[in-house]
Amino acid sequence: EQYGIYTNSQLESSLLQKFCQVSSSGEALLRDAVSRLKLSPRAYTRLMKTARTIADLANSEKISDDHLLEAISYREQEI
Image 1 (cartoon, rainbow, N blue to C red):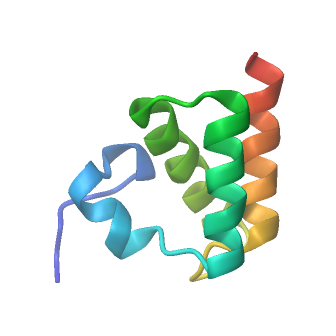
Image 2 (image 1 turned 90 degrees about the vertical axis):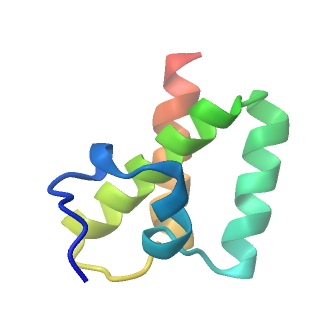
């Protein structure tokens, strides 16, 4: 399938589920981050895109818990 997407920043919310899948432990990390950091839906989307980019740089097809933790740490630095 061709989506015409060249960077993760171009991922629309509808494609996040397809390209940004996480494990059940990753989902727990995300729930905790959303609650603790009071993330808006837009911030959640940016977090997922960042995690996807980190996974891509690691040549990983899936987003691991470590990728999520790194993305969350960048978000924590912004606050």
